[in-house]
Image (cartoon, rainbow, N blue to C red; front, side, top):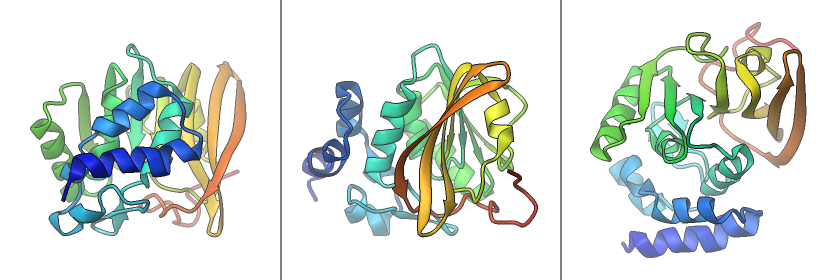
Length: 217
């Protein structure tokens, strides 16, 4: 399979039509080795408009969602990023191309190990992946300039917002199928945040996020 052509088609047919016009994001997605982060049996689907399964009940975000979140977050080269749900490490790779450092938190040890191996194979030196429960973020290392939640959550989780630095941004998908909203939150003061609904989508839940009593309004 011609993966270079598949990457080009992904950008032109999926990502750009979804209002991703930032040239730096488009260039990044066009060179991103997505096929190296999916299981071998799904490599032909690596650049398809779908959430590719990565095992252990998890899946990668669709490419167009990755493009939109990268554009919305506008991560700078001096910024520190927290990623909840590192999966196989592909979104970690994307974030690491923009940020000073990315900390990934992955609940499932086998996926965390795979993410580390994938990142090491691509010589990513500014990202770490740890095993942990990120359903309420990660206090250690906070505040962060950007936080990305890689799976949907049923209701707003204030802990994520509290762990943002002033000026920091959070990307999170909130709700239950079929009505989930991709939301961009920005902390603009010590006790003040803005929240913007970006688009509707349906994503698999963050591991454990549907457990009763974990989230509060």
